[in-house]
Length: 368
Ligand code: 9MR
Image 1 (cartoon, rainbow, N blue to C red):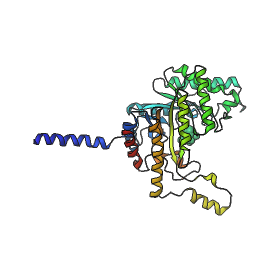
Image 2: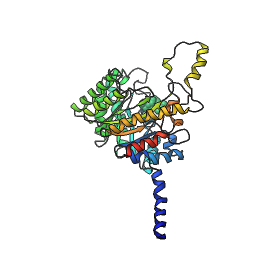
Image 3: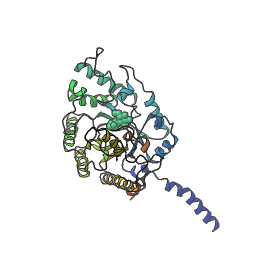
Image 4: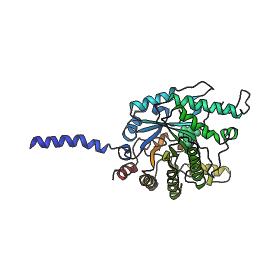
């Protein structure tokens, strides 16, 4: 009897902490990849507390910046994979699936990409060959190491028109087809995605679905559409957001939530005027929680997180990945956008690397 009790006690001691340690990936991972974007400090393994959270909660990572064009090909023909390769090593030693972000984007493109030696815009042929070379070289380098690529990022405006980026202006909308074609040629096995923000906007939704159908009709590979999901407390409209998920899924590709976070600070565009006294007020009003988040706001934020994760639960059959755009509140880009130096609370883990209350609720929701 005594032996039996000791065995039960021992079992409880081993299983108990394991249960308490259940992570997001254990519950949500049954349905889709659970990812997080890492900065280079984190993916270089310099932040052990970050690594602990990554290991417990996530099974996928994406580079917040070091896979972007300007980082990988800072000079024409001179590729620098050093940071990105360290992220691949980090992923391997922590058993994480890597997503590549991103191959073709008007922002953070290599500086030289659109101009010639004299600073004049390059012609169509030259830009196509530069685009192809970048995509081919990068995808080939990471062949077998990256699970999927954001091939084209943010090429469509909220009203559904094409963004008038240098790629569009010089090449025309075919730059998108070319990018997908070249990526597939370089690695026929790798998944390919189109990625954009404000996916709840009806104009953007229609245009992105049109784009997916167009690529498929041309016989090009596309596996998923990324909904960046830089959300706020009052946007997007949840119904429109869900409608977009259904519409995208109806085109025959998966939905990916690729850059999930929540800006909880006031929106400066509601402000007008330029008086000095108003500027002073502006700072204070725009950074109201520098000393901490009041409980009432915290409760609202947690419940808003749950609104989104309930949507992801309902749509779990359509979704192939949910990735947070950063690990802790302290490392989020939202502290510096659209105003530098604010104290934002945009992620699931706080500045002390502690999970917000909603983390346990999300795990419960997906464990039922
Ligand atoms: O989080 C990234 C930030 O560190 C960079 O300064 C910024 C530069 O444009 O890019 C941020 O990530 C963006 C992502 O690559 C694409 N979608 C919007 C993200 C937030 O701006």
